[in-house]
Length: 277
Image 1: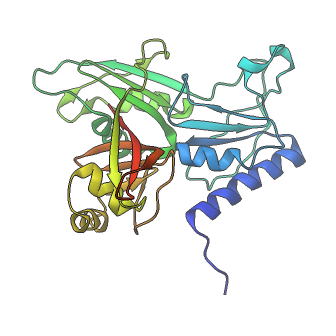
Image 2: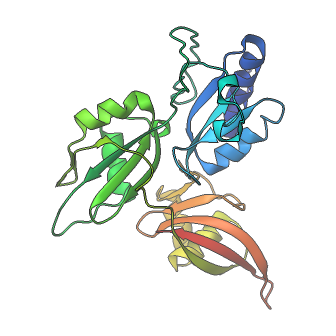
């Protein structure tokens, strides 16, 4: 009986297949927007081929992997860039390739949309915006970074869904919005609150317990109720977390695991944590 692959194994296989296709055909391979953990996993497989990450702005959290081209910012001669079409990889299952309609312009792998809004009693959050986009039928890997403050929303997305968002998403919650094309110049940089936690181990239930200020029993209940995501995937079972893993806890917040900063006198881990603002 054929053994079913885990999500990470299937992801690695998809990246490897894209690399092999590039090596055989010369046609580059472009993914959807990847989480930081997926980016690290993919980059480990790309050491022998030209590649770069594009998230639409500097220090993007979510970014697309482009295999078969060097980052234009790192090239001395833009005219030597290989030219090819954008390829949208939705859910890592569509592997269609095309070499038609090639042109001499640099391909565009990301689009940025902006909307101003006003509401006396509501400040939209990242989760509000993402929820509205998912409700509109978009796949998660079609959406990159999102920022939202008291009056402005920015969305990084695939160019192929830019028009759909602009012509379909007019309300987020009870707030009216209207998205238009923009650039990254006004997009707020990611900001973090620096935290330290004291935990018995790097197991997810221990980390959740420390971040949510609850018992480990309650933390395990939150995991069982699917209230916890690690690297944008619902945590199904308790696992050990690593440096740079992202963990989201419903009604608590989103965090990035940092370096272990030593041990306490009682032998507990002191861990640096970045809380997304």
